[in-house]
Amino acid sequence: MISPTIPQPPQITPSMKRKLEGIATIRTFSAGDIILDENANIRSIPIVISGSIRVMRTDEEGRELLIYYIKPGESCIMSFLGGIHHETSKIKAIAEEEVEIYMIPLEKVSEIIRGNSEWLDYVFRLYHKRFEELLEIVNTLAFRNVEDRIYIYLREKANLNGSRELHITHQHIAEELGTSRVVISRILKQMELSNQLKLGRNKIVLV
Image 1 (cartoon, helix red, strand yellow):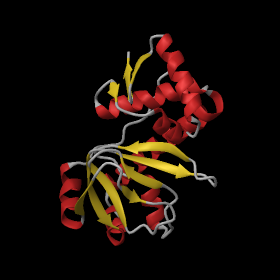
Image 2 (tube, one colour; image 1 turned 180 degrees about the vertical axis):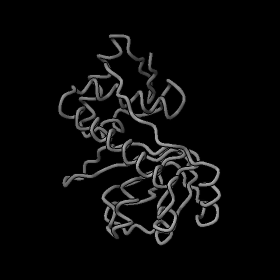
Image 3 (cartoon, helix red, strand yellow; image 1 turned 90 degrees about the vertical axis):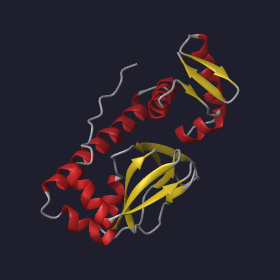
């Protein structure tokens, strides 16, 4: 399995942080809280301070698909673009764990970007990273089998948590990957037999 190379966006510089502290509010969300829902008006742009956010997309049948994670120092480019163009949200953003966020009022976004090379570079690098991640999703859905998709998903979870031991149900994996629990359980068992992971009760340990 080949690991995708995802470009890293710049971290928030001291001068950018000072600007944020002057115009943004800091909010804390608990794991599972919906930070932004689909079709909701975008009133502020998030930049993660600590924790992580998962960004989901829902199809017409109500099935959800994981698009990407927002990690410390990162923001949601879809919120940036949608907010600037006064569009409603096309995604759902959910706190993966307790997360602390700078919330930039929408009316201040153009102010911090206009004529500011640091912020312009940040937005373009963030856009590049998200574009590469979306391409990886397309490649995964089109060209990879389900086992590869599960492996990449679990590896990303492990990287986020800083641990190879994941406390997660087969149903949760199925919902985020847009498939059935039966398929997930069968493939996880196959992966255990091939010594890629170990299964426990609501627990998966990557080998």
